[in-house]
Length: 225
Image (cartoon, rainbow, N blue to C red; front, side, top):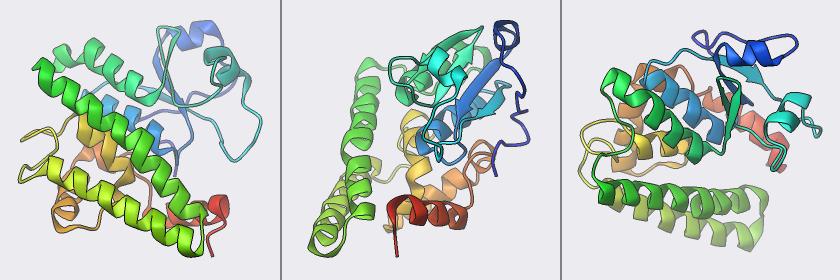
């Protein structure tokens, strides 16, 4: 899978002139956090290049070390030769820079709703993701405990969704983009219908990889039997 057809690959040596001439996403095709950036760029109709950073290899590339020397991680959005790091930070940057051009906001205009969306995004990144990782890595009783905790967290998210079409209301937006890369976790009825609605969107279909391919990758990463 990997780079989508709409995201022309940037290959060869990555000099400053090349990076300054375009919008580039540096990421691994299966990185759920990085999928957010690509979906958001598609939503706002921003053309971009894609540089593959294989996370199955321990050493990071010179490009990543140069663009994100603090955390040495992806995703990285490079715009006009300058790096923006961290998936939530990248989403907010994309919204601030390009949303007005197409008249579509990722984050709601109301400050209280924006704060709520960022709160739940933080909940996903620091609670749900860590619980899911623990569930995938563990066995026996510990796995069952992680499963119960994960289901409770997903019920909380279902409560946030309520009867709305999307977490952002009637329109696909910030919190939907944050969550949809983790869609394989959602098996509740409301969440299942939400996943279906999201996957009907071209911006999502272009980015989300095949679930079977993701499962095989996770089997190797987490030693799933």
